[in-house]
Image (cartoon, rainbow, N blue to C red; front, side, top):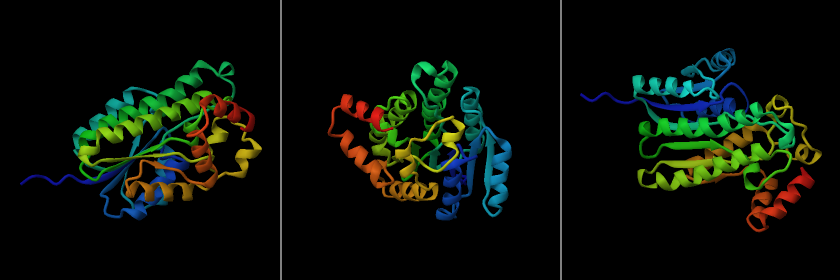
Length: 257
C-alpha cells in the first residue's frame, strides 16, 4: 500500500514579524495540516513560538539562510520525510537603509542572499514536493513597485522577488500551483529597528498591523491572486508606478520617503 504523504506548511523567517504571524494564522485557518515547518536562525524564538502554540505541531528547523549549507540541510529534511507541501511561505527578509555608498558590502550581500537567493533556492527545493492546489506565498514589499533612493538595494531585491513570482506563476500554471507575491507597505514589526532604518513621517502614517497584512495575504493566496497588496496607500503607489516613467517614480520616492 502506498504511504500517504503528510500535508505540511513551511514558513521561513518564523521567529518574528510577518513570518511569526503567518504561523499563527496558518494554524487557525488550516487545522488539517499535519505539521508546520518553521525555520529561522534563532532557535530560542522558534521554541517560544511552540510554547505559544502548544496544540500546533511545529517542526523546528533552525537555519541560517545566508549560509548555502542551509539549503542542503533543508533538502535532506525533505528527502527524509517526503511530505506534501501544501503551503510555502517565504517570509525571511532583511533590509538596511541609507545610500548605497554608505552601506557595507556585508549588508548588501546579506540582503541579496536572504531576500533573493534563499527565497529562490528554497522555492526550487520545495517544488517537487508540491501538488495541484499547493500555494506559494512570497513576501515581497511595496518597495518592489518602484526604485527607492536611500533604500535602493532592498527595493531592488524585492522587485526581483516580484518578478520571479510572476514568471514562476506562469511556469507552474499547468501544474495548478499558485504563487502570490505579498507587497505590503511599512508594517509594525522589528524590521526597521533591526535594520537601523529611520522611518520617515510619511511611512509612519501608513504603518500596518501584521495581523491584517497576513490575513489579507492568506485570503488572496486562497483565491489564487498573483499579488496581494494591503492598504490604500500602497494600492495608489502601485497604480502610479504603472503609469509614470520609472525615472519620475525614482525621483518622487527620493523626495517623499
